[in-house]
Image (cartoon, rainbow over all chains, first blue to last red; front, top):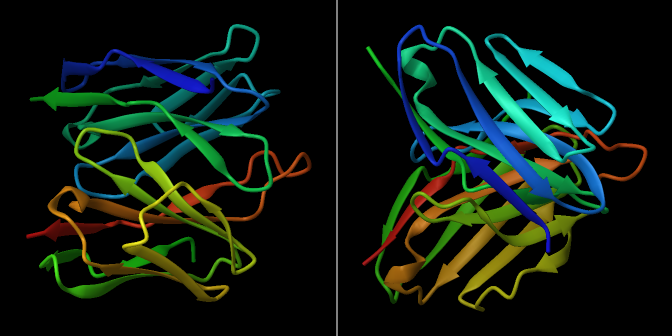
Length: 113
Length: 117
């Protein structure tokens, strides 16, 4: 069964601190892995997308890693800001004719001043 | 333009009403999607349109009726909904994927917050 599991479920950090979110997946056949940021009541916004041959990808203060052998990914947020408070969703795409997305449950991040 | 535009942003409707959600994109994407998202849950796929034809229906009740009038527009017609259908409805679009296009991006709209009373 295709599954994406994220940890932790929720996280509270102080402004300016770094944090790392984890994602484990069992999806086949694998196409790519994405990290999305979703503010409450809004649509997800893409942060990074990686295929199996990519180990790391950065987008500003966000850096994602992918280990295709262990089927693990992480999202590292550097120098957190209050605006980083959101849900971060790991999504794995099944290789098919359309974007068949398998969503993780998300990590709810709260950045406090 | 990398936007997927959804209207309305908010909708309150009675159980006997008929309403429609609209989604528009101008990125030349030929795959468009409807998702339903309940609070604190990940989005659930409802429908997929590929080249304006319905290709995936995830056993969605017939009170939800999708329509793709052209390659830029996607509608979701609502009729006789139940209170449990209250949710955030997300539209997304992408190029069709395949082995030669493994990293194609999926863009989401901002969603329509639907409340059924």
